[in-house]
Image (tube, rainbow, N blue to C red; front, top):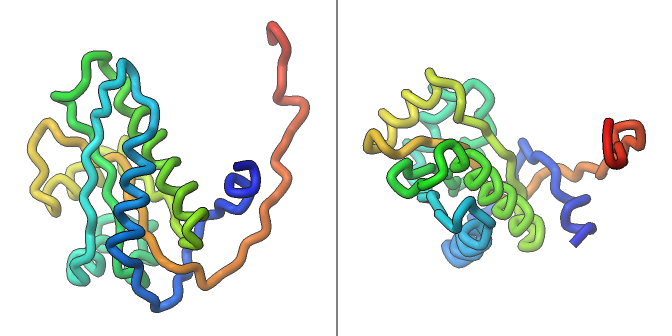
Length: 167
């Protein structure tokens, strides 16, 4: 597992090779295995494979240019009606997003986590683009493709940031 964690990098350049629906389903299965507060599982996922939508996204998300290089993306959303512990949906959707990123590495795919929540302007534009009901909040967007770049894993362990028993 540590190897997969180390190999996970933010990929912003993709080959022109299609990702299968089967692989997308594997990513979604991994997402739905994420822990959630009170086992709420407040997530919904929109699989995006419409080229027009993929090409429109950079018009509303300033850091998403790479999405035009892939044939599929996943929009992770929260359903506020599925929450019993207010505010914990953010952590739940983050865990689901991370599971997608890690499973993608396992499948030889590349991804990048594009944050949507908590930028109110971008949230509103995504709600409009995808016709989301008021109780559905777009959380993250994940382009999925075959990486056209190979990034080395940095050593990020910082001993001075580890504390024992107290600060």
